[in-house]
Image (cartoon, rainbow, N blue to C red):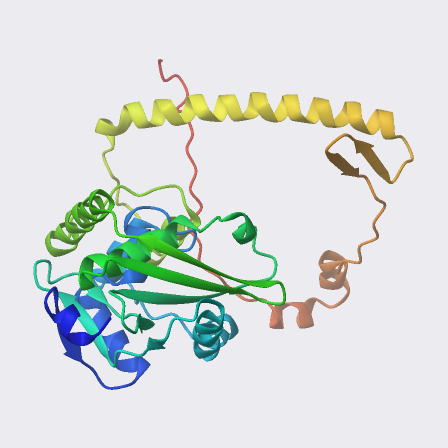
Length: 321
């Protein structure tokens, strides 16, 4: 694949050869790593969180960490391993790409395949990953990222290479599928329209969304009350779920008690596919109440104040069903 081929399908923007430049550009559209979040496939970032970032309501900057550093440093190594395994040569593009037809679709690709209308995405994974790469599994978010790049560049296929630290190296070829690409484009367009209009997508129950809501609304104001009369059905559904959770929790505790009675003093239990542990453990804790009684002046010096917003739903006394 070469740049002249890509220019038939996409506008190529030459950026400074730095990560900071790409970080400046990414909130102007959707990049490949955003595709999984748009579709609700990312385990790290929900559609709601991505929307809040793209609209500028919360900071999209993620402090650099060791995993991110390792991923960047090993990108070239993964590319070299891919060439070694496949015989295909790869090259850096030196560009980021923007779709002509859909200008909000951006692509900062890892590598292009020399002599083929295709690209390469390089990944590193923790040795504790549960994805069975050896069995042909690929995380859905990775699939959507590759389809995003095919949509932007017009490529006929996209390769993905994954180095699982200390365990193995795997690579896969993903063929272009027009139906999949059009479905992705439609989903991304719908999402980007919400970014432009500031209309939030429906929040899901992920930790990502919960943390974003806490960032957006960290404080409550005394005397302010929201009229949620139109959400009565939501509250009724929630109440029914709480009752079901209590019922299921009680059933689980009963089964646990039966198992404990059978194990008695045994530390481990084995049953077919199941391993059970009921092991004695010692834990040392700090008795802060005793310390406060013995050292009241010192105790107050180490107190800190944090701000939280506990979410509690209670049915009013006398409320009729």
